[in-house]
Length: 219
Image (tube, rainbow, N blue to C red; front, side, top):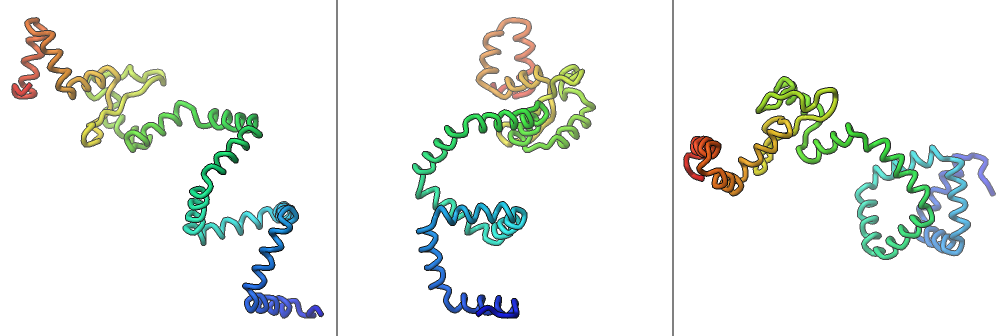
């Protein structure tokens, strides 16, 4: 017999569930196994009718149980590696056109030269575009060695980030030519080969004198 008072009825159901939790959970589990398709349909219809409420609940549940969800998901994938591969392959084959369009759209939105440049700076040097602009302003928009500005005039090209390959320290910004030339000085074997090749020439004498001043005759 239903209660006249809805709140009283709700409280009765809550207490009954607490008292008989294991029994009710097992009944629900067995019903779900026997009526898998029906249950899936009910859940889908409920989601369509309560989309925003369902999203809000799912997000709140995720925030409260984040570590547990990650652990269960990781364990599931570890236990079902081959099954996951088959499912992904089947899904891709069944939705090839849809996935290709999605990939094409993403590339159009994210593979612009500006966004690629931002990702490269962050990934290779841990620099933001703001950090790069500060370095550029500090050098008055010029190459740190030859003071060239033509490397990026008319909105084309850019100065390259120069860094120490051992300490990862950012030293400044250089044009392509100076950046390539500087890399030679960092390769001792290559520098020795150049000096041997130019030995006896006027350029070789100048370079030998310069390297002696820099390296103190250690080459």
